[in-house]
Each structure stands twice: as structure tokens, then as C-alpha cells.
Length: 172
Image (cartoon, rainbow, N blue to C red; front, side, top):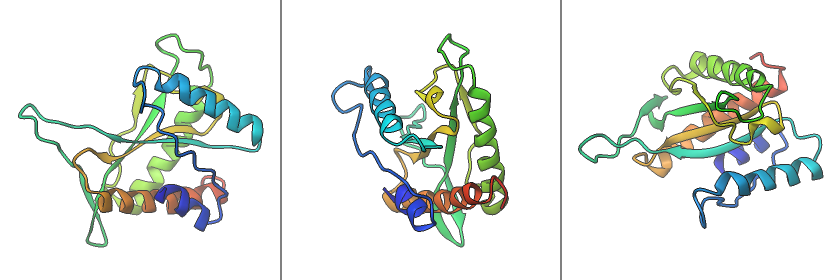
């Protein structure tokens, strides 16, 4: 919600689907979310970016939840990670490199603006339904160890920067 609100407040018309696709079946969550993605694209053909927002789970060998933190103006802020799906496991995703390019532009500018806010981009063998629109990125905002306020601080920083980049054709 914070990411969508921040994008809207910064002039990027944003739709926010609040459906929890893994609520009933974790293994079918991407099949269910794909249906929603296709419906939104059909209803709103001008959609240019699709952000699938999650929180990561990082647990060490002792079972402790880890919480990667950055500080923005002294405020503890969850770190984020951009995940880009590929076709390496056979998923039909021939243009995944375009999503990687978008992620790299976001990543570079977020690091320049906020330093340690971003964890490394994660390339994955699954497509995560990102084959349906260029600019589709899975965003991990914090982990299961971060607080809600840390995650919201991260989402605000992401939203402000991404909005600037979208409005300025990838340049801040």
C-alpha cells in the first residue's frame, strides 16, 4: 500500500491489487496471480510496469530471523531486493532482458540516492508472470525480520525514486 500510495502521490497513476494470491494455495499462487495480471492488462492496456511486492524470508542456521537494514537520514529502513525472472528453466519469457534493464536502472539510481538500501538484483529461473509486460519486477521489501515501519520507509524511498525515473525516462 505504501509503495502504491507513494507512486500515486508522485504523479504515477497506480493500481493496487490487494489480493493475497498465496493465501489458499502457495503452490498455485503464481497461476492465480497470472490471471489477475492478464485481467488488469486487458482492462488497462496502458499499464507499463507491474510490481509484484513481497517480503523476503531470511533465517539463519539458528532459526533467527534476519533483518537487513539501511539508514535513510538516520531512519532504520528495510533493504529491498529486485528479483528478475528469466527463461532459463524453460518458461516462455523471451524478453526478460528488458525487465533486467529496467531493474538495473532502478537499482543504480536507488544505490546512488540511498547507498545501502538495495540488496543485489536476484536473477531467477522462474518467470514470475513477468513475461506479460516490460517493466515487470518482483520487489522484496525487507524480510520477515523487519518491522512494519522499516518496510514502509523502504517502500516510500522506492516509490519516490521509481516515480522520478518513470517520469524522466530513466534519468534522475
